[in-house]
Image (cartoon, rainbow, N blue to C red):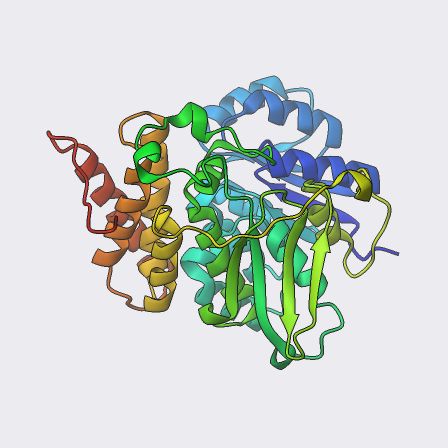
Length: 393
């Protein structure tokens, strides 16, 4: 029988959150808490359907609108970061954190300090504060279960492995995004409309842009370092356009185990919830006879410089990845508003991280590094001539 009977979901109105609710409903799990941004209409529907004891939104204005809509429902409605953290701390067997970006760090820490096991879809928690998060998880006896498809794949391949000494390397697969094979000249002309068209996955805007720049894969590499306790040189990124092989592990004897399946996030979500067991899922079976060829290529780090910048940031360590992540989040927002170009995203992220001293990884230090990086990006975007630093290109 599954150990998890109750679940709190942070980021419930996003792509991962809505799929997690689909999984939870099919498994018959009790939803104890929901947290979202400002999508009050969707959160209202979720509260009425799943009857959590508590719900939280990003600010008091949205909370007021939600309270007005749910006058007839016995649910406590909270607001702001503290409200989301309260949901994370609440009574549940498992907290699934699918909040987007740096905003996911505070609820990750809140859940861990409350002793809640964590299904982590918010990679940024480990990108910006991996040292802090993993230390607190160990101190509080909290298990962190990966939800990102690549990290879930690695986690699945490692089941039964006696120790990290048996692992030669991890292979993280990347779709390559919509622009794989393009030149820098071609990339200089693309806009948000093209970048938001992912070939294989349906995701939120931020992660879709990160996938297009390959920065997402660099962030996932940093996440894998903390989740699996391996150095950067033991993690390799491979472009696999079909998104059938979700990632693989090569062992000391050079045997390789890979996890394959159709591109559907409900598989890693469900495995995090039911681990160590497997149960039937709503995901369609893979049709082996229609797959065709599976291809594997090296990522072009000279064209997609964000991946290279992430590798450099984690090698420098400390607060440098926090600066890179904050700059990237700010640059992606500016790109979506058409205030900077596609190539400027990685250039600004690398330039901001280059300015950051490693320092000690504390929560306050992370917040300061994040704020400084965002301010740097905004300042560069406001330049009269529209230029941005080019030394990362």
